[in-house]
Image 1 (cartoon, rainbow, N blue to C red):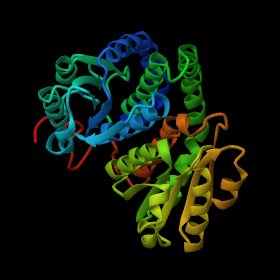
Image 2: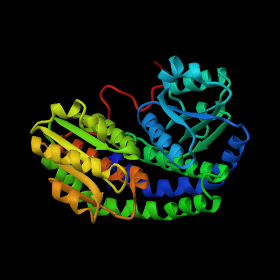
Image 3: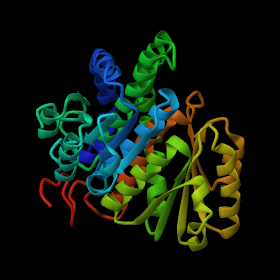
Image 4: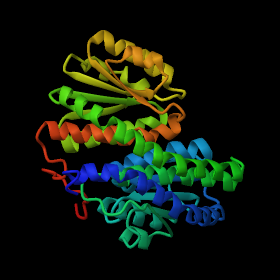
Length: 361
């Protein structure tokens, strides 16, 4: 711990090993879970959670619809209880996502889903939690204890949901089973090593950027498709740790109102890997530059178009598209949030007005 100074930084650097352990532990478990789910014959999936777990659920929705081709919705836990549960029934699968497994709103969502006759799967970092005990099936990340704000638990949640979607796709015939297993195995080997390498190489760069932009009033993070939940995670983390107003938007929505508020005291962060949203985001960056806001972009190292348009360019490995980038780019932006807090003389491990886990209303 002394090597890092704060739990948040240590836990960001724990992420490669946490991902490796999560994928290794989850491989056989996911196959058993998905075979059980296949026999239920559900028609629709709801992913519910709070805060960063809700944002992981949004990523899960993209992954499941992309690979397994099953209609999915991600809903904040209490919104699910009060509203979305009216269309839940025996044909529904509800996936409850919670780092602690004790979040009161997510437990209420679980109980409402059971009341409606839905089958419930939990995803937690605590296999002995109330959520894991009360659901029909449980899967677990292997992030270990997390003391700082959500970093390694978030990345492992997103990785496990990615693997769940691929395993579903292989089991129900949307992908050849061998192909799905091959993708999971390749990512299990490549993603931890890549994240470890990129964290080491970009640490100084992210601290320098944080020092340069620590006094900016607003930060807007934009991503398309599966990179949008990555933007949501980062905006939430910047608010929690650096106490700067930060918001996340999908590429297409940013033009419809939010762009009007941009000015010289704003930073625009573009998450722009290869994918279907890349061209739209390039056009948006051009418009942002005309307004005068500073642009920080993350994109593949050979993306000369994004590099040319950006004030600050963070080169990322080129062999990962928007689907893997949704969790591969996140650790680097977590570093940026951490160093923003440090440069602003804020302890990122201690919250002022919130708790890490809300166990009561």
